[in-house]
Image (cartoon, rainbow, N blue to C red; front, side):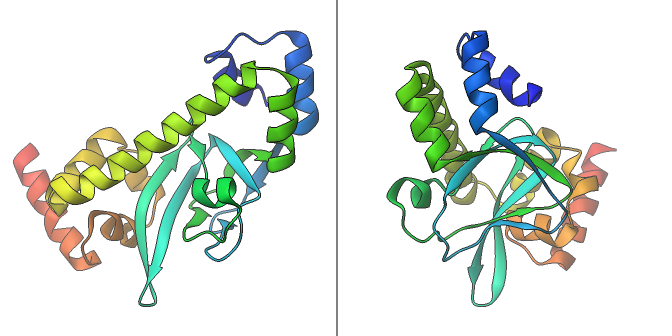
Length: 192
């Protein structure tokens, strides 16, 4: 809980009463590796803050998983459109390793928004973070080659490569696993 509170403190000043309200309505939940946090077709009833671990966002297309994003610790995670509109989600969220998330249910979010305008500021920051994440996804898909996406990923999140299955990384950069091996070799030869 303290990690989550520290994130919120970096956005707004929280007093002891604010923290008590947060502790009363926010749950910290652990998800084992491979656990589905949100599945396509379900309505999102909560959004999350990643306290520790990695979460993968993916879509289903023709029976295959297409990885679109990885959320490391320190980021808010959501099926935002589903949460806001209360419509079935098109995305899947999965813990790719043991992951702890602060769970903010719709009821908790409404309680916090009614409690203090501080939480409106936090809500705006969460929305901005989600927008930035989605813009980065779109930009990467439209402007970067698979090799450039690989290089960007290894430079921005190097620990991901020891923590996430290679076929998820291949899917993220838009190639088959065997092509990922060739991209890795070319990358390593350029760096040596």
